[in-house]
Length: 521
Image (cartoon, rainbow, N blue to C red; front, side, top):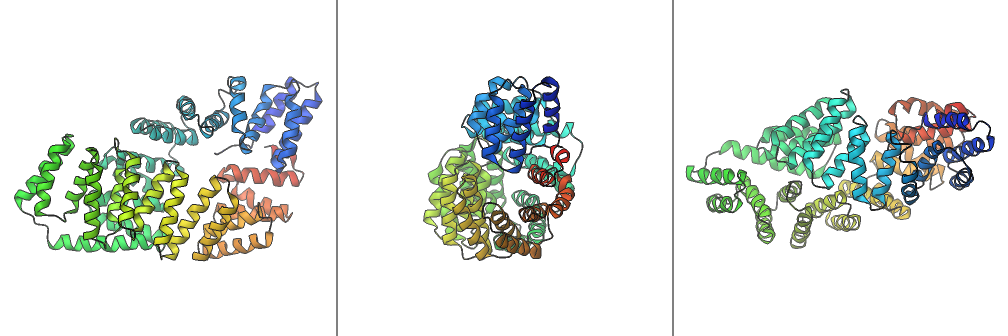
């Protein structure tokens, strides 16, 4: 989470001194607890906090303690303290957010959601609170409330470039609600604010393709490739789409009777008369069995009718008939999973079953893995990603899969496995700057090998213009080399990013340079 530690330590120390000016021992313990926390001396910081809290100290000292507990993943202890200090910090968005996250991490999801909903109405312009509240509503299958939360945030916040991500989220929610026009409007607004947002162009292209605007879809996929470089999956899909577009240009006619059956099926679908719509679309498909729009509508109808056996049979048949377009049906199932009243669990099961029939189709397991990640099914996601690796001969794709596996292992705090996957990603594609940067950061911190850290950092520099993450890693290496001035110079430049990790690194550097005042700020 994002934490603004620039001011709060100094403010709390001032309050503590004002309240207990006579008690220098409390002041001393609090200062040293925070100093060791910032310096990374966790054991020592814990001892100082224990000593501090055993005395009659001010409740204001708990702000530093709560942040310490959160950084050290002591979520159960935070939850124990909520009844004691909740009232004192009811107007502190950062502490309230920590409470909500701690509840979620301790599987008290409902309490976490309730708190997020409450504080989102109180702190309407706090981006992370709004983001997590939106995710909470989506988890509870309340997309309308998620949309209202984002719109309230945007209406109460200045138009900032970083707000592009909220327009992206709005577009995704619109898609789930079958609001294609609103989805297109919001993804357009997102790209207006951040024209180089590659995922935005991918969603734009997908929406245009779903809307039948193949020319615009081709433009979107092309822009995505220009921004991300070679992506064989999208390249193949784009090539297929261009062929389809050219074919459609040559022949756009169909029998009026067939058209009428399709139109009637679509009209009945929009009225939620799924069984009748299915009858009409089946008649239409007897005449145009390869019509993609009709096939897609049939899949939607079968899902709404909970007829997943028929859905699997139909998709399996169409994959066999058109093996060149191996990504089309997995992608459609994935998009269908974002539709209200459609079970994501059943979509995951369908993808898994189809994958067993079509073992050479990598997209089935990749989309299943993505859905599992979104639903916090980490073990299943790892299984699907490993299946994908067995099917893939694309080294660039494999590198990205290994990187995703490394992220999942990191979340589970399995650092040895994480390192193995990062090394595998590097072997598959040494040109990925984010992989090299992750390896550099690992060896500079947990790996304690600055020679390796510098080697990987140098590779990141040769592959991509240094971004904030790469520069932060460079500063960490300087810090480990005790070149504090060089680290300070980099981190001061990055300070405008308002990133909690960067601010923490800068504070540590100031402490090493004996700039105590600047460190507390």
